[in-house]
Image (cartoon, rainbow, N blue to C red; front, side, top):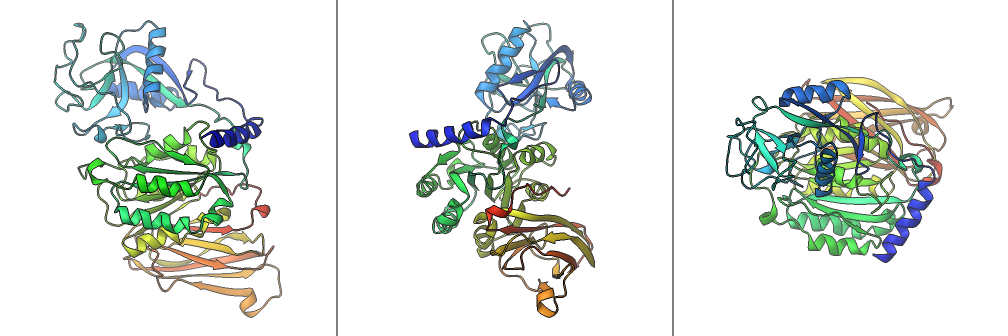
Length: 495
């Protein structure tokens, strides 16, 4: 731990010179260096409070993800000498806290919650708030408020937002994340291995055993390695290591355990909360430019991803997702795919051997210096031009492309990419190449190719595709290089 702290201290001392502290809009207070909040003491129904936050600052009613934030929120309210309970931006669909989702799309209350086990005596000025034995409780209502005074201060209670009017706190992101722009694509960073507790323990161990055999390639880029098991009834910490071999010990000690996981299919994955937790990790590890490999067995229940995408982009974090075709729960298979699409990452769907291959064959893990990224809308069959590609070096490069934006692989027929070097007199195979996808290589819904093109050439490319139906899809096309010396700027995002 001493070596980890010393290493990170040196890293952050070098990075902090370029960074400035986060700032808040006028009238807002910075809460634990993470977000900006403001108390509105005028009592409103839940819907009116939501409308107020979104109309004034395009924000949300406050979310709370750890005990220190819960206490900081109480301190803020007490500083205004307010005793009226406040709405939290939390909505529940069952009596299980895992079913309660934050309005700001920051995940579910499975990682942290402070629900009261019994209804405390409440002030008499609002008798419409019912008494009940436990929270959350749908018989009382799907919305949630927090007590700010009395013996149960800080506890969360269910209520009907249409019947009850309370004070509330609005939140909005701070205008700047410290040190965020101080890293380059070649800066030392963190590699996070995140895996669902719903997966087979053997599958998780086999995937990381593969990486353990390729530690040198991954260590060329990353100086801190992290692992976390998610989709648990009680969320766990993220474990950080400076010694690559320590990750194996940590993974073996935290393999999936069905006794610890969610028990119903309606509960969505808490992976978005885990990503938020990683980005809010303070100085435990360098965040900017980091890479995450996520093994997903349960799909999220969130659909609005604007906030998480904005934060990932701000930190230049790459998301590589392998999603199981037979989920154990959750609603939306597209959520993580869409996040990867908008952040220059990629997402594959697979099962069995295809799931393992997709997790271990991504060349980006070993040389994640991205030099080209585009997203391709397709439907039915056709041919479309792609943006020009400039090849920066002579080292081995990796082309990665998804061949469906969902699983299982049922609508794909074939596709191919033609390219030629611009402004050259090259002919034949040197000038024109066809990358043919008329077959599937066992990586689920993505394809990888290692190649050595001519350096410093600009390539025209066209993409021809055929699917069995005309449903709209967006495919991810990425190119990576092993040479960190030729990549000194971040690749733009393709919306």
